[in-house]
Image 1 (cartoon, rainbow, N blue to C red):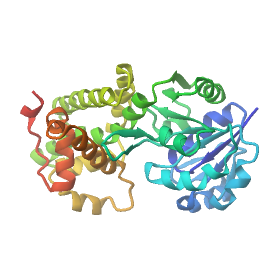
Image 2: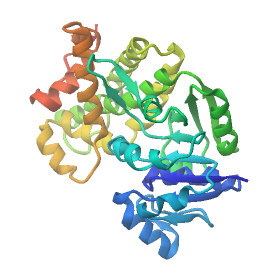
Image 3: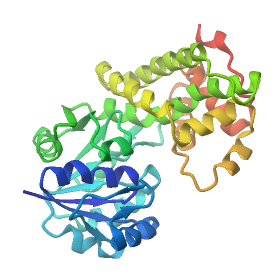
Image 4: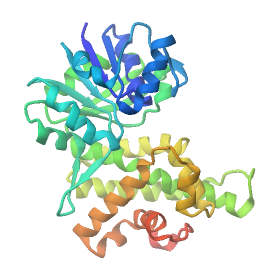
Length: 338
């Protein structure tokens, strides 16, 4: 059996402990400075206050200042921070890793370079520690369902095929199904963009409320149309980044689960109902809005790279950016998609 150290005790990072423990591994869950209350509570009674579920029996718990101890002898390190925690992870975790270490990241996001090109997080981290094998998880996965052992199918991607396969062997279970992929650009683009476009699909939910009031049934035709436009644009962006067309399947799957619930759906619904973004942000105070960050960053990158062509090729993403950053009305101009 192996030692698996998970850095980041948020919902998804903590959920990754379930397949690891079910496979008999020693699991060490390390909180970031933002997870102190989660670790303190779990040390009392094993309960994860955010997931609302007990952690697997036998899991070892560490605070951020105990990171070096938690890394001793680790066969796999899982980076479980949000996109806002990547710099912390790079500054705090990477210097402690031995050469040859294997890191599996669940963080979804992209970095923009000066020329408008977009770099997946695993490639960025590898540029800082080329002697470490970085892999990443992509695909539809809700943390609650993974923790409860429901069938889940994801991709593990990385440029080191041996490292990807090693991660797969450690974590695959009868319910956690893993497809290996070498398409880091495509898979990582897919999972990063699902937050932006889930907000876009959710505009239609808010628009129905705006037209008919609270309690009105959802209207699925406009949601489906925005879903289709989202997949078109994500597929186009994957191609622009040099990814493989087949990775769009992970984009569509991840978009599907994100539209069904969570903070991104709530934000898109508020915006679609006519609530200006500053007010929506206040209503969601304390909630991490990765959808806002990725929309703004990627649209700026596309403008740098494509100029005026960016809006013609990515009209829904441009519309979302205008709502968030220019105070535009959320009403969708459907003819832009024709």
